[in-house]
Amino acid sequence: MSDDTSWAERALHHVRHLADRIGPRGATTPEEKRAADYTQLQMQKIGLQDVRLESFRAPRSGWLPLAIVFSAAVWGTFICWGGFYLTQMKAIGAIIGAALCLFGVWTVYRQVTFKDHFLRRRLPRSPSVNAIGCIPAADRTKQHVVLVSHLDTHPAAWVFQSPRRAKIFRFLLTASFASLIIGMIMYVLGGFEWWDWGFVFAGLCGLAQSAGILLVIQADQGNFSPGANDNASGVGTVLALAERLQQNPLAHTDVWILCSGSQTINGDGLLAFLDKHADQLSEAWFVGFEGVGIGQRLIYVAREGLLRRSIQPAMRDAIERVIQAQPDLAAQARTATERYTTIGPATWRGFNSACISLYGERDGIPNWRNRKDNSPRIEVEALAKAHEFGWELLQQIEALSGANN
Image (cartoon, rainbow, N blue to C red; front, side, top):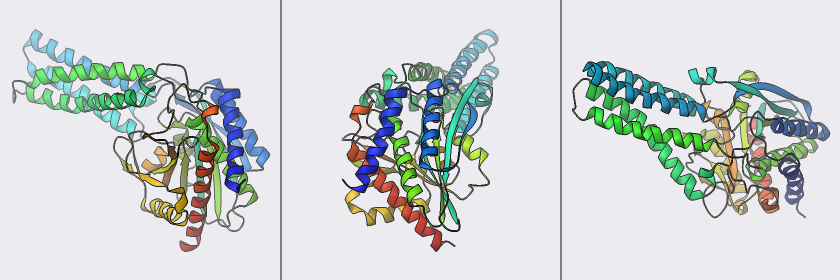
């Protein structure tokens, strides 16, 4: 048995405990806390330093702000048309409708770029937790790396139970987002009588926004996934790498381990971590592991999210060095994905960061947001491939500590 396979077996042990013994782990639920307690205990057994749980408060739903945004835009349609028929003053209704669409556009932009916004501050919050540990450098510390995975699991909503449904969902949701921008323009054109059909098309945008309400409500329904691949496989891989690093620490790189809570709620666990440790980790590298338990195609996400945020050139160069050194891994870039990975907030804040995943025959993480995401489906070979790539990437980042200092 190769070293990487033996470490993969260690990762699989953690996957089985999280997915089978603890089970579905929705954000801010008691099961998420049990998963954090488990990872904290494992870090302590491994011998990591400064092991702790850091509490924070997260919204209960990642989709609720979007439901409110689309609802406000639909109300703008009613106010616009009602105001027109009651007062015959197009401009007033148009201004209100355009303002509500603008509020929606601004809120969505802030949401997808991991920035604070009005609804985020006002919605109800519940306790969540991050599990953290550290492997100090064997010699003088010159840089920091944070290995990231997330503890919580998504609702297994009907719209995500097949790749086809998920693709349709993404298309319709994108159209609903676009209708906010188009509707705002149509209100202005119609309200100031620059185009007679402006209000008509604004009303059609209201229909698209109504569809958006139904979509995001549906996305929040269903029991939580067992989360073996997404993302107990990532947690297991990070813990296995931590154990290996504890035995063979890097010379000049402190490695932090972060198993975050509430990642499914717009990355709140990593956001809380970044806010708390911004000064200490201002130059840190972030390596995420998400959905690494099934599949043959090892990929790293080069551009992620609706706005296609690109990873930093330094991280891209480090990954390319791993690809050259380990051609058998056949790692490839995923140039764009509409999902946000477990290190999305770090990417948007400009850190050297990248997420490692494995894909099956079809694009995307196998069993993502799926109730079939259980431990018997996890493949040791996939875990071994992710572990090997992660270990080699750490060596390349360590090599940069000498080149940059």
